[in-house]
Image (cartoon, rainbow, N blue to C red; front, side):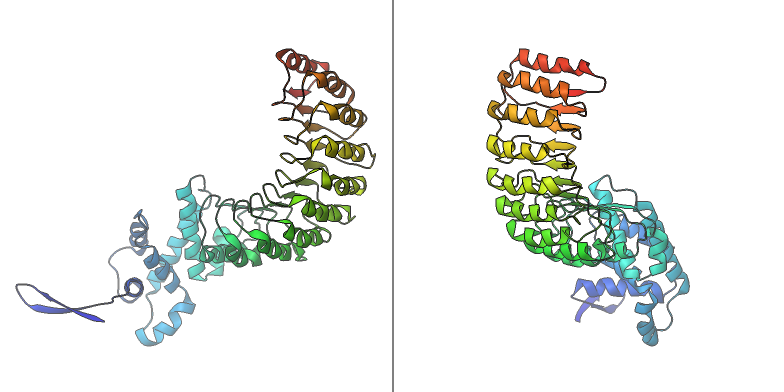
Length: 421
């Protein structure tokens, strides 16, 4: 303690202060439970929370924590019973705050306020209160909000008490591997899990693989876009995909998997137990060298219907190999994205010959390649003969205005057909 002497005109008084602000916050919170307060406790807490600079946040967490009988009991042995009215008032305030914030996540401020209320729930250690307020929540969206490892531990605690959680969006939250480790115990409960742009790295995928191997895993959609992943993680991922029974959508875009990573993933796709239906591999460093393994997988896979290979350097040779797989009657691909993969007029005949006889393809993207008017007749033939095709996107190629008009005119060939040039 430091002793601070204060003087006034009438007398000299001695005031004791604590140099550590956290102790001051704790004592201020403790005082609310020991002295009858003429103010309504809920009103006091709301006023403290209303400060935009967050100056009373630690005080508020201490107050809520002291409403827990676990926290209060050892202190009451020395200080006497805590005021029951104050305890009830704090619990009511937390309930009101959580219920008011749970759907307010459109703004960053709303998300931050919701996270703070989760901290209150965590501090209260009141499972009944948590289940009443968040037990039936289906969607939690904290995207764009920077989360510390402590925030992740709190979030994991809350999700663990949610009985109906389906969708967890943590896009761009900077959680990294340490934060993911704190979240790990609860992730298997979610059906849609978006973890893009979090610098998870290969070690993060190992943690996620543990959640995916959980026999109670419910994860159906997993987004790992932009996470500093390399081919080193695909061995764990491939092993997991071969055994997991729930995962159907996987987004690995904007990582450095390379051809070696694709070969390991292809091994998983060949496994008859793999349930992946939608695989997004946008800009992951693929070349035509990996297509032989991929083709082998597509010939035997019975689940994959949506494949995105855009922004990779497959070239004409890679797509010609891919065409061989699409020609196989067992191939189930319905949507194929080959945007910006280095295609030229040289591959059009092979591609059209294959896809014209395909009976499952409903959507095809061939944008941002190097097709010219030389490819227009073949593409027109594809659009007219592939009866299952519902839309084709050809924007960003090198068609003349006349070539574009010719392709666009095919929209009228059958109702509902969409041709984007």
